[in-house]
Structures are given as C-alpha cells and as structure tokens.
Length: 224
Length: 139
Image (tube, rainbow over the protein chains, first blue to last red):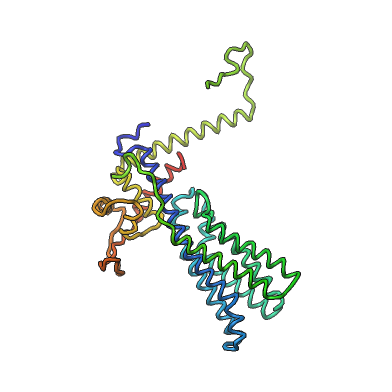
C-alpha cells in the first residue's frame, strides 16, 4: 500500500517499531534482574538477619524491626526503580484507555502499601505474635501476584524463564509454608524453603543480567 | 482453495440477516474504518515528520521513548549502528527537537564523559502517535 511518498515503506516502519519494542524487553529483563537480586538480599535479611542478630544479643527487638524495615525499604527502592521503566514502556506500548497500571505501579501506591504492610506486621508482633509468620507469608504471596502483574505489563510476548522461576518459587514456597503452619512450627523447614526461594531469586537475577543482546535478523533495506 | 458462495448457484434466495449477522457486519465495517483511519494517520506522520524518513531513526526514537534516556554506547550496542551513523541520526533527531544530547558526569570505559541522549516531550508525543497508529494496524 502507498505510504504517501515517505522514504521508508510502511512495513519497514512497523518492523523498526517492533524491533525497538523487542530490544526494550531485553533492557527490561536486565532491570528485572537487579530487582530479583535486591529482593533476594532483602528476603535474606528479613528471614535470617533478625534471628541471627537476636540470637547474638547484639541488638534488641526494636533493632531487629529496624533491620527488617531497612531491608524491605531497599526492596521498595529497587521495585520503584524497575517499575518506573515498566511504566515508561507501558505508556508507549499499551492502549490509551487502559491506564490502571500507571497508578498501581507508581510510588503513590507502592509507598503507602509498604507503610501499611509494616504497620500490620508491627501491630501483629505487639498484639498477636503467634500470627506473625502467617502475616508475613500472606504478604509474600501478595507480592508474588503483584510482581506477576508487573511482569505481564513488561513483556508483551512471553514472561522470561528466569521470571517464571523467581515468581513461581516465591508463590510455591509461600503456599507450602502456609500449609506447613498448621502442621509444624519448627523453623528448619521454613528456613529450607526460604533459602531455596532466595537461591532461585539470585539465580534468576544473575541469569537475567548476563543475557547477551538478542540477535535480530538483518533487514533487507531497514537500517541505513 | 477457492471457497464458493453456497448461494451462488442455488435457486434459493439468501436468507435475511439475523441481528447477530448484522452486528458482525457492523463490527467488520467499524474495523475497516479504524484500519483506514490508522493507515491515513500513519501516512500523515511519515510524510509530515522528516525524522520518520529513516527506519534507523524510528528504531532509536522508539527505544528512547520507552527508556526515556540512554547513553550513546547503549544505543550503539542495541541498534548495531556504527559510531558515525549513530551520530548522524542523533544529530538529525536533535535538529528536529526530538532528542537532547548532553555529556554525563560519569566517565565511560575509555575515560571520556558518556554522551547521554534523552527524548524530549515533542519526540515522545510524536512517538506515541506513531506507535498508536501502528498498534491499530498490527501489534
């Protein structure tokens, strides 16, 4: 079809745009890689950091809570940084009518939610300490769904393998731990499941960061 | 294989269109109008903006629209363009007011300041319109 005298054909333009979106998914994959690593470190600190420090008697209970909040705060900064890229991309690739994602991935939603989650955890510690593991596991489960939503926005074709491993491991370990809560409260199994999840996230992060730039087939008359 | 119209040789008259058929026909018509509108809009953009007269510039611009800013080294790695060719396209895009180029404070691998390319609001809105037209057609 006639393109009205432009120097490039309509097919070439479409190809260039698709290629740019494809290459950007590679950049997003790398950005998500940093997110996996930071979240893995945050999970490590909040799962194993506090018990280790408490057992050594170096800091008191409030110190342990502060450590937890610092760890989750670092995770929130990483989430906001990665989500900014997701929002910038979605703004270009998503249709005009569907802008609910913009609010859900913005700091106006993320930061108050983080404050609310921390408040819930602290209140649970003070009022009903026995339910703290359940509350934390439910938060992890919610996080898995939330990150899955953001991943669907980031990758139009298919979610990368490492993301499936990361989100899948968090989802499965959270479900398994919640199921285990009714059977045993022994920390060994929980530590094992959390450790496996953290290892999966670090693996996913390193894998995503080390992917080479994707090869794109040569265009016949595309690039000058 | 050519699909024959079942009513072409039949003496039976065509049945009247049901409400459902009517809706499908109206839907097809709407789709065609949307597609024609998208083609017209795309052609207008390709004609009006000299920046879109090269697929390399379109590639650079859509990449920048999604990331907002990038170093020239990153752009070179992603697009596969040579240094001179990339500079040429970036200078043209800067001339059209679609991107801004500045030297970053951080130092690149060879000890020289990194050149950062940032998309402007004008470039962003042109890019949005372009991708919107294309997504109506294909994406």
